[in-house]
Length: 220
Image (cartoon, rainbow, N blue to C red):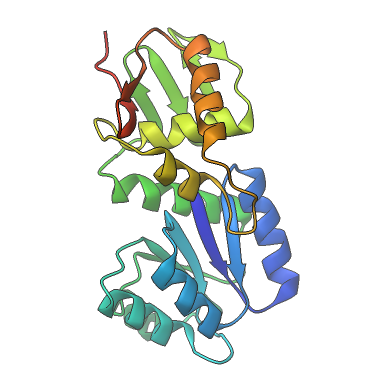
């Protein structure tokens, strides 16, 4: 999953990016509203964490322009303002959730997970496909209750597919959502990760749709 973190204070942005990356997300960042607006209009994010108090262009203006342009990615706003009217204004501008500073990293991660799940019509933090279980909170995967050890990239591929059950996902889409903007991307490596996953998961868990990409197969 790929996120955009928009925060102008380095003292907060740096640990936030580290915490999100440690949780398995590919993270782009912006420290002003102008760059955030451009990234949100041009890049495919699974969720955005947006501070309201930004230089150049304020966060509410950025959010409104994303929504006016038809961008539907879930947005969690961060605000130091604890007045209820500020929260209402943010929600009315198109935010999906809000978090008031200061906050605990665990709460931010929980809210991001929930936003991504809801955007795909999923209710539970534990994703199930046949005998394969993926816990988005702990990052653990099991088959028939037995733990399966995955690398971080293997986990990201599986998590992305399990967030989109029944959907064909292209190699390009996987590459766009698994790597941050500054990462040296190579869509051919996706084939390698899918091959490794197939050796660790039940047969036909991941199907190849010729010329299109991959999808989760019908559970046995």
